[in-house]
Image (cartoon, rainbow, N blue to C red):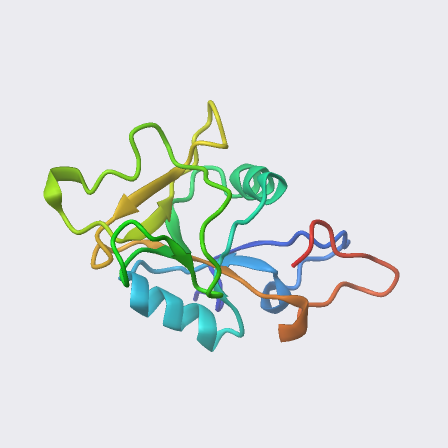
Length: 156
């Protein structure tokens, strides 16, 4: 039996992990980018948006070893990377040689592939129809809460 999220990373300073209120969670199964985004939205979140160095490092450390979709794509216009929240890409954490549209494939979606040597180099462009885990994020406005007397670390 698998819970709604196979692996949760709770960045609340809490004694207990409440799997249904994790700010960051990873799907148990792999799917294409659009289906992965739908999965996240059905759970009250969206694919994760990584818009700061601190968030990239925090997420790289907490998800070490897990590859998955993040909420970034250039499907609408090649070379113009847009987050699922509608903002354009400003802070970048591409691995060396990325994005590359390898072998002239249409690699329009982004996978987080943890880089143990340098967590700031962990994004790879992939075809949106490849299957990956979904790295989802819930915001505080979508039901994220910490236990009484505790605070949220690094935003939500």
